[in-house]
Image (tube, rainbow, N blue to C red; front, side, top):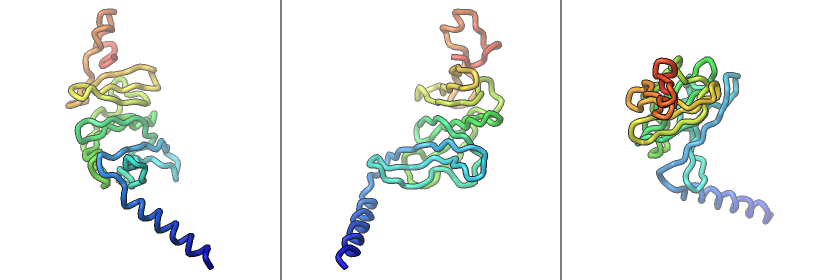
Length: 170
């Protein structure tokens, strides 16, 4: 009869630890997923001490094959890497709440030059969004505020690469 008491005590102790999770800022991890039924296309929220806190995206989302993400202010920029529907989307409320984030806008839409199976995203926190792509093995630069392609990098421009040929190529 002692064993069940010990088991119950262990479960209660573990449950007690969950309530001691650290508060914001939170950590976000993407799950790749895909288009097949049952695939997981989600961003999960964790506390900085490892407590699983829930899902960051609403359940009904058009996203699939999630890849890189970057924080910009209180928003998250997330790469959707489906080859037939690649884009970068912005959500508000990142790192401040355990609630699902609200989609703000598609910052770089499908069909934009350089968005060919995006993999990694980052920002300079002020002006530009940088996106690496698997489809072209390149890095492209976009304006954070508009999502439009930025000028080609000065180094490439010095080699004769033009915005007309490769808009946003970094």
